[in-house]
Image 1 (cartoon, rainbow, N blue to C red):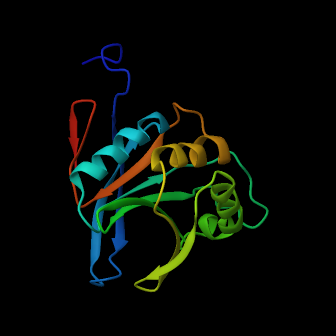
Image 2: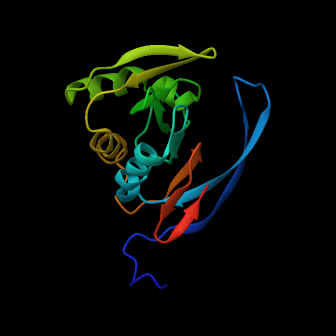
Image 3: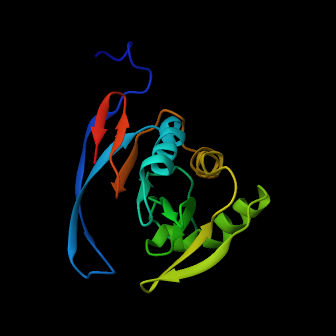
Length: 170
């Protein structure tokens, strides 16, 4: 299928990540897919429909927005299923996520969402569990971090299979 037939193609390519599973303490190898911010709503809808508790997606991207606290320019935006509901998790592990904690909290609350600080498996994070997660996610990527709608965004998925542009990812 060529690009003119599919307005939102998945670019097959990416990177291998070796992550630590904090609950089992075992390493996990994952493949990073590439999508565009315009596909975030579709990814979150499939997470809602197909994912169970502890299923998640992480969007990773390089932002042109500078930080005075760190030279890390790659925030990570996570959404997960908890008690059957998709919510946003601002995980406070990476330097950029930590540096932007206050500003992200202010941005999210300025849009009318409620943020709670949580910790699971010794990992602190901000959680938003009510409201339109797709609109909030797009706002963070495009408005807050100034990413164009057609930019490349890395995607990690866990706990479900994702289908985009006729391709199955898991």
